[in-house]
Amino acid sequence: MSQRSFSDLEYSAKRKQTRRDRFLGEIDAITPWAALVEAIEPHYPKGKRGRPPIGLERMLRMYVAQQCFNLSDEGIEDAVYDSQAIRRFVGIDLSREDAPDATTLLQFRRLLERHDLTRVIFERINAHLQERGLLLREGTVVDATLIAAPPSTKNENKARDPEMHQTKKGNQWHFGMKAHVGADVVTGLVHTVKGTAANVSDVSQVPDLLHGEEDSLHGDAGYIGAGKRLDAHRPETHIARKRGSVRAMPEGPARERVRAAERQKAQLRSIVEHPFHVVKNLFGYRKVRYRGLNKNTAQLHSLFALANLYRARRWGLLPQG
Image (cartoon, rainbow, N blue to C red):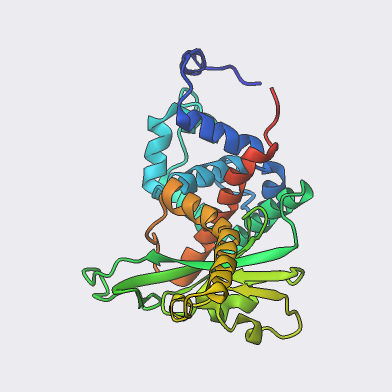
């Protein structure tokens, strides 16, 4: 064990633990670091020539902190210098070494994108949760959320991102992409993620959001007709009716029964809003950071993997003591 610096000793002796301390401590405790390092290591440079590369787990921890706080490459580099909590999470002692710079993190992020490793991270984390009985196979809730993209053309190409599109929701137009997810109907943990342009219909993505073992499929009115799009695997569908069709029914017992059934459907579907809340409100991911669907979809896999970990921390996976 390396000798601790005076700043580390002073920091550990403080009485108040901040929310950032608690958050990073919980993420550190619940993340299966060994499994993630094992998955990435075959693609990580070995450093046979020139300067030896920075340790893989350290770069992975820096990348995780970047996603949790919605920081740019330069932003997380500055945060490592500014925040003792983030330095401890990453494993940096500034009295002995410098923090990895933004260019090094950029190269690591591109490595993950090039080899589709964020999807592997997502799958490894879900396998870790499934081993502990938190990812069930009984039913899937499907939903999608809009992620805004910069609509400005004041850039080098004088154009918007060609892979992003606009769509109308209610009376408002939105430009960007959609994050489509399939989540467990019991726990709300996300088992499938897909990114598309914003103008792609929700129901068209249903076949890609199922894992193939569910007995039931749940969705809002945007998924009407989902069952007709499935081939071999056809779970029992529980899709919400359009509000107008319920309002058009005459007053009476039949309408009340339909309204009660719709309320029950809505209660089951509401669990899929929890991972959206974590990604968009807690992690602060409301606008795409990169150009192109591939890069942003890769980031979505990382974000929803971490959202699953964050939500699973409440279910007895943190070490005791």
